[in-house]
Image 1 (tube, helix red, strand yellow):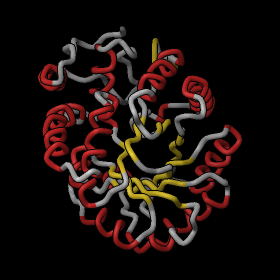
Image 2 (cartoon, rainbow, N blue to C red):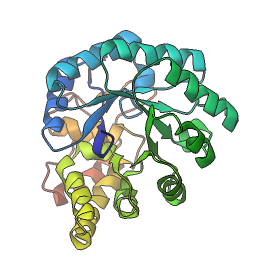
Image 3 (cartoon, one colour):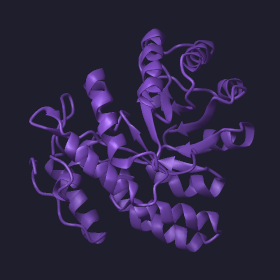
Length: 297
């Protein structure tokens, strides 16, 4: 299951509340673009700003919209293992297809502590787990040796590797573990795929998701010139999407396209003028409408 292009979906808001009809429309749209699945309540989904009741409502609305044809993975994170364990058990009851679980953030545990944390989460759920390594957010790296130890349990099925600008650890994971390795750095999807990565969880793929699917298919087919061309075409848009904290630029672009309102919850703010200008240039090159000032469409 954990191959191909996955999209960590934004959470639409309107007037401070969840916009469930918009979430359902967006999920249905993305599901028809050849993607492998959706991740809800990840960083891009502003999960830390959502109550548990809101997370459940979002999951149910999206599930109803896409059915069982598109897998739904739920993001689960926290600095206290007990809290994460409680979250994990909930998604078994709801019928999710898997969990994306980050290392504990802020507290910076040892590698032994990280391993015990993930083992406790696995014991609380029957769902397959995607490890999420994103040290620039959590403050800790999940070392390859720790991943190898966890991979002895087949419940740990994949890892989203977001180690920053380096592909070194991704290469080690491919060489030393049986896990499906998903690139978590949108700008590195092409080289990661060439190294053998099984796919990506890509926020920027909200915009032109089919291009990311084509890129991966081209690499797998050995059509590297075509894949390079797609990657080059996408690079300016990816740069613009991450010119300000995620998901503000994405929400600006999706709002202009009419999918959602351009609304975030504090401490996140709408994209500023310089970011919108970069988005305009990139979207124009891709044949998309320009992004105007902050609005609720």
